[in-house]
Image 1 (tube, rainbow, N blue to C red):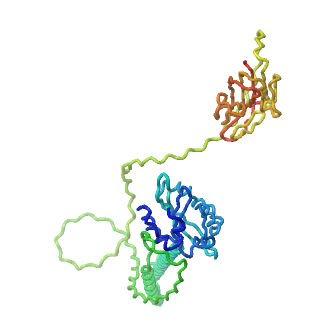
Image 2: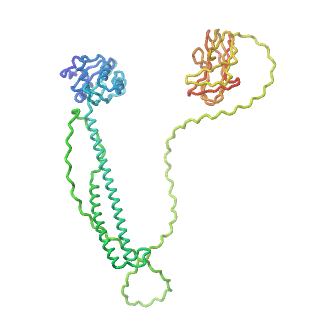
Image 3: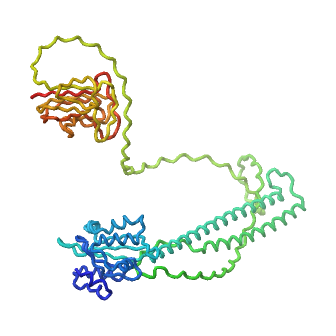
Length: 525
């Protein structure tokens, strides 16, 4: 690795001939484009400054402190403290840490990161950090890290967006103009229909009019129709010109072409160009065509057809008679009956099966059923013979109050304050949840737990702070009665706790009247 002293000057930083071929290629790609360039040994954090161009924050940091940090992680933290906004500082440091870059480069050949930097003069700039994998072996893991200012790129992107917005506005305006022309054309058609009704009035064919118009009325209508048609022609020519202008307006631009190669970085802020002159007004459009002739008046009704007479004998062919006048056009016949419904088309091909829907949420637990009536007390059996006294160490405790137990995710102890029968060497804590056995030996421990509602909960014994696997009944949503029995060897002063646990926090209500929960401890030997 080149020493840092050999890379601090512009003349010496290009001395990279000792690098492997791959690293020379990387440097040849990075040096022309990136204003700051570092070579980092990611295993140790050692680094070399290969390039520091003027007017960069990296240069400002080096001028402020001529002795950069020995470790690149520390160098990054000092840079961030000086030039990175507080809200972006943590992310900036995290990306640049040597361990993180190495972890990412194990899977990628190159990485890119963009950040917002503020110079010591308070000037905002946007930069791109670009790191590529260098030499990698068992001993070294090198990377090249370059920085470039992308303010000019962002400015060009802003220009493109502004051009696109302007094109969209022009297209929207063109659509509005065409819609306005269509509305005016519709208005002209209504005017022509009104003039047609005037002509029907003059001709005496207007429905409900019995007498024809007088001569002076005919002259007035003629004058009105002529004036209206003249005005309509002028409007039509104007609309034709509008439509031609709208259709010649530039249309929306096509899709953006592929991004060209990145050019050399220009100045951070170029001068704003002067506004171009306004273009000349376009020439008037051509005169539109003459409008169509007005509509023909309505045809009078046809007389009723007489009955068909019998066919007479064929007479001699007489001379050809004069051509008679053309008869009036008959009225349009009534609409014929609707045709029969066509045959049903062939059934289309079956569509492909749709994707499986998402699994629905579990339904809520149903309400607990009413407690059944207490059965009659059975007859007392005969008293059995007194068995041998295996041990003097035994204990029993229960919960008969129907207590509510808030069950946490890590498990919650069940208090057993009732019906306690404990030998002198078995004691309970103040909460009646922890029972201490003073004498070492082999013990038989059993428990019963009954809840009012079946819940997604389980039961277990916790012995000396450790969950007892043999005693565990895992959570089952349909279970409300739990009982288990184990044999275990205990050292002196061992602690025993009966516990409810779950995967979803909730509240369990124990059955009252003596059947809620109980714990029995018997020393066998």
